[in-house]
Length: 334
Image (cartoon, rainbow, N blue to C red; front, side, top):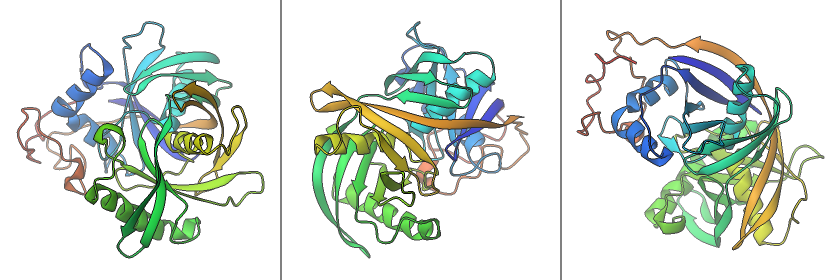
């Protein structure tokens, strides 16, 4: 399996350019389902240790249904599959430019969450026009063990978020373990109390926000992703969800820049345009850099051929649809 690694404002992306699973044709939603039910060992082998790590997000290039799109892209991480991933979309565009497959300019990409636009400014900078984003619920209060009362908004930016200013400590790098523990407690409480996104969608991202460290930024955030890793970038879909909340509160005008700073100090320059029905189209500009190319090998005698799985959270059904047996995949090849 040939892959190219990059990072977007610090958050890594691994693009599979050759040797990915044979998902056939059909809508991207159908192909994601096929990926998860029949070829999930590809995801686990390419993302999990020893070939990957918990912060890594994968992107599989595939033929788009819409011929006007440069490519279709399916995003995944150590926990499963993502409808959209902002940093990985920027990283994918920069990777395609690195490969000589696209040139600077505007490009359409088909994702499971919908079609997005990427304006490739240079070989390392791009502007993403994300999917429609919106706030679903305002000022949701929950009582979280070891934290107390937490109030936040539920919003969609390509993934579902709970956004809150009630962080248990300052948003600094030395507090990442404490912030991660608190965010996971909030996520579990939301699930237990059946607080969801639209149509019962799971809220799988938690975002704390607070004052920035830089005097030229507007906000700093900490985002916990579904697999338990924190986002090193300001999070593209999380920043989109934040913009939707700001727009709903009348705190940010259309076209006005909002500089979102991440927990490590990287940033996205963001703005939005109204899209009707209380929704917005977020616009995010960030930088990505290719940092490696590799061919991943899979030895059938390797007991960790399909990656080291740290929890049952990302242990899917096998290709036959039965409960997974960790040894069952050992004899299979990429």
